[in-house]
Image 1 (cartoon, rainbow, N blue to C red):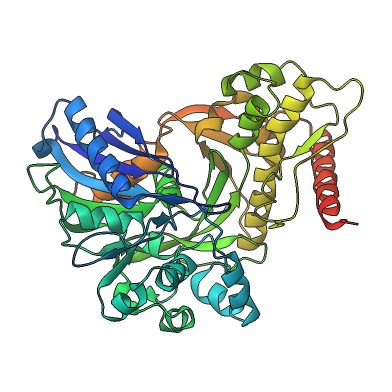
Image 2 (cartoon, rainbow, N blue to C red):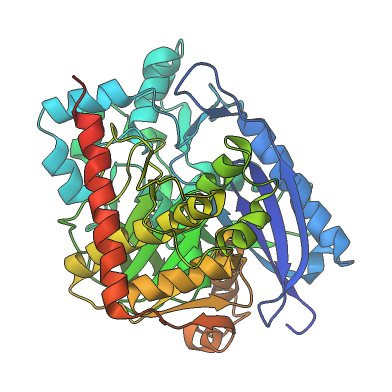
Length: 500
């Protein structure tokens, strides 16, 4: 397939992207289009499913056109997507019955509390690897059935289909021919038993969700069918699906047990491959499926940090300390260290491994000598400290000592941050040459299914180092920094708890 390419569709929370990759894993062309974020009331976040489809189809065609090739030059299509976002549509008309309810949406938080009060938490975690939370798809499906007129009756008649964004795209690309998802997206619904690889009847009954709504669950890498849409003249194989963080783990080629990647975006998503055994977390991490290729299923531990790159946006938009996000490295680099200043960016509470929703952002250790540079440095440091907390939880859960940290995402371009991350961890932080790891992972999964790449071993040589950051700080200094951070986090929690 020397003159063919793999098309990766990266359907994200704020934009739809499409990328064409060649046999060496290089980006040949890229197209991107943002779409509307809908906020009907506080805590609610929605997308228009038709706009998700139209923007994704549009950028797919644009990326192929930009490369100057036709549909016949595309060996396969891989899909990666924002996870947990929930779409319910009418099988007969193909029309959504309601907007997509986005993963960030909290409207079902009270219902989640009811499920916990019923004593379901242990059952849900044992079967799905997940805590009961409004973040996941299950309670969003239930909300649509309860609040959209006629939805529950249609669901009982088998007329409604549920899908995460990948299912919606495949349904449309195949002109309603396929209603499927892959194991990674299924594992984020709170309805899928990650041990049996089946939808769980006990959980479906507890949430009163008809099984007929659910897609067929398939491996992450196989030929599911062919695109029948008007976007491409020829029927291109749809051959790979994985949720965004799973795809990034695969794109980083973290294919061995104990390998870890951290995506430094608006938040941080740390994922550790734990091999063919799921590890139940005792440290508030999520147990999930990494991917399935053939009969083999790989599992993972995942920890989410709410505020990472967003803290830089706050310095820019909230405090006006910088005019662009790129300026933070220069400002923070103006001082050797934060001089005892710590910023705990709990603007939306603390994520893993603390899971304290009441915690709020706090700044400690400020003196008359504190400058904007010290605050900028403390803000950058906070991203590395939060990542350290999750990585230590992963080591505790897995019993595996991390050998290196593979990094990607926008903030991974910040050399000051990456060096401090390596210093804190005491292991190398390694940044690849191709940082579009989410789309690349989807391309790899699709390419493997059609023989574009022979096997996973053949991909390993494609991972190319751009820069390696080696620990350089003296251990006593590192220990002192970490002790200060832990003290700041304790103080942040105490502030939240002491409401009198």
